[in-house]
Amino acid sequence: MLYIHILNTFSCFASRFITESDDRVDSNQLCYCPSIIANRWLAVRLEMVGNLIILFAALFAVLGRETMNAGLVGLSVSYALQITQTLNWLVRMTSDVETNIVAVERIKEYGETKQEAAWELPNSTLPRDWPEQGMVEFRDFQVRYREGLDLVLRGISFTVNGGEKVGIVGRTGAGKSSLTLALFRIIESAGGSIIIDGQDIAQLGLHALRSRLTIIPQDPVLFSGTLRINLDPFNAHSDDDIWKALEHAHLKSFVKGLTAGINHEVTEGGENLSVGQRQLVCLARALLRKTKVLILDEATAAVDLETDDLIQRTIRTEFKDCTVLTIAHRLNTIMDSDKVIVLDKGQITEFASPSELLQSKNSAFYSMAKDAGLV
Image (tube, rainbow, N blue to C red; front, side, top):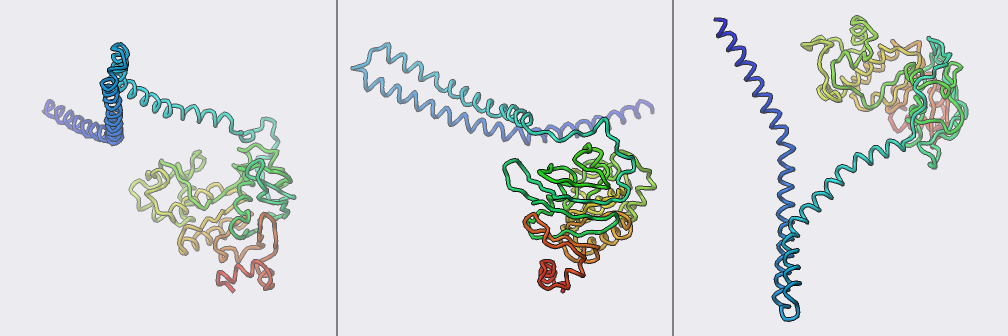
């Protein structure tokens, strides 16, 4: 019986090995077969060119036999017979060099790319609980995407008090997303400064800055791995905290219905989740971090109205004591904000409460609200 059991076990492993081997060979052949076809296509045409050269060499030798000596004819025909092999080798070597030189080009490009600022500053005196209030102040702030280009933000100045909810609106190209990139120092200042709770962010290490701010982006970012890793990549929170965040993000029932729960495997980019579910996962991640400054970069632009309503309701309750900067795609999401910033061509044209701006029918915000059918 033991012998039979060992045979069955071995047979099972052998069968799984053969299946996996066949799958890997099939996967390799999917790439190798087009390569072989391309090589044969090239070889046939190169040999055709070589044979044509041999034909013309022999033809010219026959036609010019009266004026050409035998040694010259033999030399031309013998070299023509070698042209096929030489031509094949020349074209293949050229293709190999062109393919492999890409690595050199990439190394050269990376070597010449300007590096970001220091990730950590060894002599930093930043308080552990910074920012405490979440006060954000822009002082004559300017930014451009690259040296030599025009300014994207042209000296904007405004102050957001701790705990305020501020909506940022504007036409396409007004500079809304550039403002978000500047807060995280994805693009560096070309003039002016950003002060958060008395600290100039240009004087901070990038890790210290970015770890104290939270963003829910327009395009939800998920990585291959478990749902838990996507929510808490540094394993800084307990399972109870994660389940609480999922509950506030209205994902608890969905995750409970999964076989593996929070250990459910997420494919690359979160392809096995819907767009709305991916956005709610990003919301749960923000709830776990719970920093004093939250940025919403058109976070609900790609989701349906029901999911949009869930996200907005959670933000109003769970982040009521935090400073929230919302780049709005739908104006109805910022109508209850404390203030609204209207950007145009990199400058602030209006900065007041929504009700105050709607009272003036000449305001740009009123015009946008009218286009959206809100007034």
